[in-house]
Length: 99
Image 1 (tube, rainbow, N blue to C red):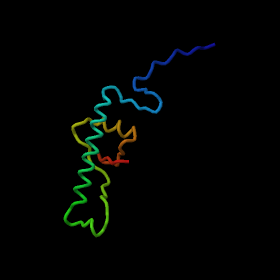
Image 2: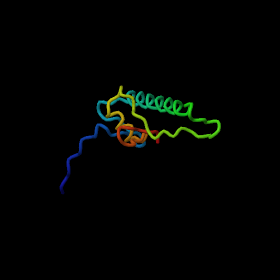
Image 3: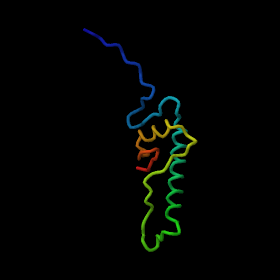
Image 4: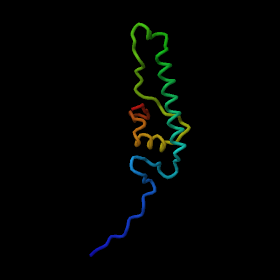
C-alpha cells in the first residue's frame, strides 16, 4: 500500500467562505485599498454627473463610467487580489470597475 506524504498546508488557504490575502498583503491593506477605490469611484461618478454640458434634471441619466485607474498608493498585487476576490472587476488597460 502506497502512502502519500501529507502535503504542506498552503499559506494562503482560508476557512470555507473566507478568502485569505497572499503572503505580504495584510487584510488591513486590502480593506484600505478597497475603501480608497470606492471613494475614488464615487468622486469620479459625482464629477461626471455634475458637468455643465450634461443636465441630469432633464435626462435623468446616471453616471456612465466604465472604469477608473486605481489609486497608485497600493501595489498591483493588491488590485489583483481584490479582483480575484470579486470585489472589483478588471476592465482592461489598467482600469477597474465596481462589479
